[in-house]
Image 1: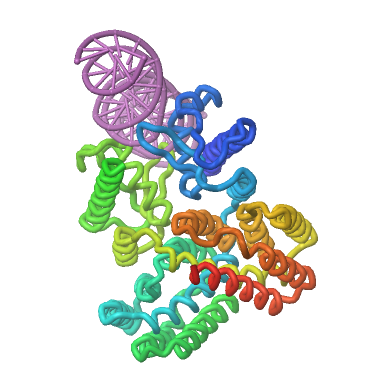
Image 2: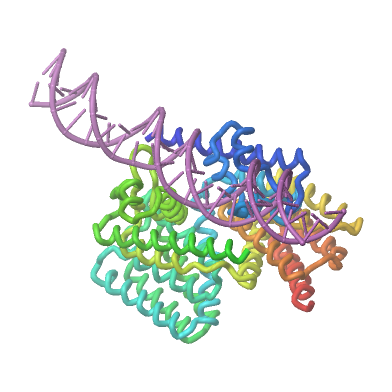
Length: 233
Length: 233
DNA sequence: CAAAATAAATTGGTTTACCAAACTGGTTTA
DNA sequence: TAAACCAGTTTGGTAAACCAATTTATTTTG
């Protein structure tokens, strides 16, 4: 296990090295938005790694919108100037794994917003999905079963009903990490499910009634319960 | 160009098919958290695609925390139950490209939070970085030059100073997309730089004074200016 | 001489082959 | 008997080979 971590660190280090070298190359050659990078083959030769490794680094930078690969044509610098490019690559290289506190903080921020948006924008179809998720949650929780998954899906249904695809995506990214960390720290086992059901129903009702302020308040109460319980353990 | 788009759609469709099939496999075999998936070779044979395609699909699911690949060992189901797994894969398959409105909405939400956090938590080092970014922005803007990059870096410096790694990451994801869309819609050319300088200085001062409420208000004003100007064109 | 046609080279994408680590089962040994 | 060891297999990761589309250079033709 320790070795595996070391291996992954190595991989990560190599990729970071390649990203740094790509950055240096862009600076050295004064490449500007729209300019073409050397081909993957040349880069792999220059940096003495395989094309796969180069491609992975390029894909990462493409994910953050800094590069763009075009088939049979080349990889191009995005419409972002050199200065911003350097700054962002710096940030990407420094990106650390998110800490639990930052995850929770961000989740609360997102959910207090998505629940308001959901209350405002939810369609009838959204409402059906929400109710379905709520019922699934209730059935599990009432029988004393672990309902973490159903809880999670209810919150995701809210994000979907918010009509904001970006926040929906972010929630998808955050939630598994939250789950993992919850389990890692052995917090938040069953025990607050009874209260959880009431919370969820109140949130659902507020969304149904299209009352954003009430929905936000109920969500806030929900988190307060949740994290007070968790942190008190 | 049209062909390229078609090709990419095909790739996307194939990947979605593979992800669906992986989901079906997990359901069929009743794989639970920690269980091992069939090897990439077996999957590539079973689904009649190359290993690369399988790997890409697995990597996507790993990005969302649903799977975890361990070198020389296998790919494992994450600590998320079957129900949540199915729900999340459903969501991932339906994920659309973010629309501009959702990007802006999310950016505002994030920045109003990060600026408050930055005002509360900023270290002296953060303050130096912020000032550096501010000066770079002012120099460019005062000379009538395009200062989009410097503007962007100032906002990223705020995200960094917020001490919330998750929000920092999200800002990194959002900002290039915003830039691209701004340029695509040909909005927000120069013209509000004068006002922009004042806004940035006010935000910086509030962070320096560690006044979260003021910082948030100044950021709000900044966005109001910005998007009024943009949407009025 | 110019323009159209064609062949050669270059590109990112895809498939295949190879590698070292790690797991597996059986054997040996204290 | 059980712990240690060792060969063989399986694994994800990596490098290399191949492909189709594109671009560029050259040739042909009016």
